Amino acid sequence: MKTSLAAVPYFWSKDQYQAFYADVTQTDIDTVYLGETVCSKRRSMKLKDWLDVAETLTSSGKEVVLSTMTLLEAESELNYLRNLIKQSDLLIEANDMSAIQMAYEAKRPFAAGNPINIYNSQTLKRLHGLGMTRWNIPVELGQEDIVPIVPTAKELNIELEYQIFGRMPLAYSARCFTARHHGLPKDNCQFKCSEDIEGILVNTRESDSFAQINGIQTQSAKVTHLLDHWQRLHQSGIDIARIVPVTPETTLEVIRSLTQAIRQNSKETGFEDTGSGKTNREYCNGYWFQLAGLELVDAT
Image (cartoon, rainbow, N blue to C red):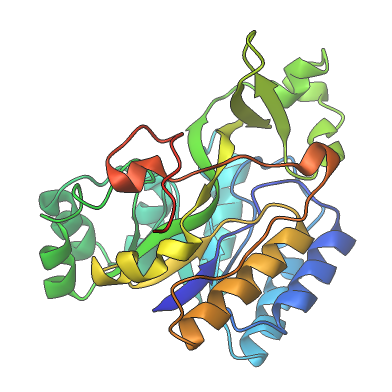
């Protein structure tokens, strides 16, 4: 089973990104996704900076995939997408149908990102005809949901990727929830999302964790944790176990724990979250087991 690291969904500084990916080169992760997927106003890294990081990761033996924006709203964002496709021959992760269209027109293969709605074999075949070679399965699809689709994917030689760790992407909006939280309009957000390394937790009135706001993205408050179930996923046909970053330190520990377990064919990864204070996390994995997504099933 292969492993992948999704693009960082949060807004970090250039130094933070570069230090993080320098550490990633020293891990055994197989594939690394790079780029901004949430908000085009996050410009601490230019396209050239991402391509420089891609070159370093490629030199260290990693497959690199360039991720696209999820919700495109302006011509400037389409121009950036065109440049991304033109300036590199790396695999593209398409997170919007416009990216699929541009990749198809450029005769470029692509991976369908989590926001692309694929729920049946007919859609899988259609997008394969447009150049899709990998499918990042929507987080709400569980083991039984994908049973009818896996044979088609295998027949078409489409790689299947499933999120095994990280907050689940739930929704995207034209509004910026982080700006609104700080009483600011979206056009003058003052880049407040850069102050929260992994978003802002939202609780219910009963003080239960509800969601995590990250700019225009809403994430699950709880973090998907299927690390100790990786063998079950592999047996179900999943080719790639996907890690979605949280903080750099925790993400690197997750990578080390998972890749070592796979290398040793060990059921348990031994991962322990050592976060403290505002980085304390709750975990879930219910969707995979056909339960409510916020449920947690132990690896027994």
